[in-house]
Amino acid sequence: MEIEVILIIATVGLLIGLAKGGFGPVAGALATPLLSQVMPVPQAVATALPLLMIGDVFALGTYWRRWDIHHIRLLVPAAVIGVFAGAYLLTTLPDHILRPALGLFTLTIVIYKIVSVRLTAANYHLHNWHGYLAGVTSGFSSAVANAGGPPFTAYMLLQNVSPTVFIGTTTLFFSVTNLIKLPSFIVAGLMDDTPLLVVLAVIPLVLTGVWLGKRFIKWVDPKVFENVMLVLLVVACLLLFVKPG
Image (tube, rainbow, N blue to C red; front, side, top):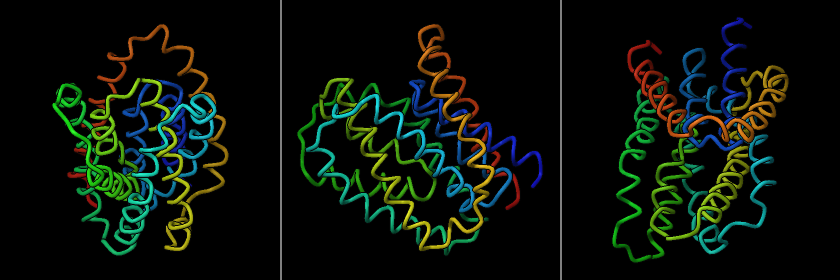
C-alpha cells in the first residue's frame, strides 16, 4: 500500500477523534472526501466507518443517557430505510458519478452551517413526518457519504432542546446508524476492499484525537477551528469534481 494512502487514513483517524472530542462534526466530515482522493468512493465510505464507530464509543460514554428517546424512536426506523438505499447505490453507481455526488452531499454541510442560525429562530410546529423525512435523508446520506449530519441537525435545531440533550441525541442517533451500516455494508461487499490492518493501526490516533479535542477545545476558539475546517472541506469537495475517477 502506498504511503500516501496510509498517511491520509491516519489523518482521517485524527480528525474523527477531534470531532468526537468536541471540535464539532465538520472535522469528521472531512473523512470521506479526503479518503476519496486516494481510493474509490465506496471504499472510502467503508474505510471511514470503523474509525467512526470507535469514536462513537467515546462520545457515547461522555453523553450516556443524555438523549431524547422520543426523537430516537422517531428517526432511527426511518434511517434504516435510508441506509439500505444508500448501500445499494454505493454498489451500483460508477465512481465517476459517486465522486461529484459525494461532493454535493458534503457541500450541504457548508450550506447548513450558514443557515443553521436561522433555523433555531424559526416558528416551527413538530409533525411526525418531519422526523421520518430527517431519518431517511440522514440515513441515506450517511450511507452514501458519511454525511448524515445536515438533515438530522436541521431537524434537531427546530426541537428546542438543551445543548446537552441535542448533542446526546445526535451521538446516539449516529452511533445506531453506524451500527446499522456495518452489516449492510458487509452484505453488500463494501467492506471487502477495506484496508482493515491499516485502519486497526490508526485506532490509537482516533483516541489521541479524542484526548486532544477534549483538552484543546478550552484553548482553541472552536469557531476559528470550524471555519478552517469548512475551508478545507470546500477544497476537498472541489477536488472530487475535478479529479478523474
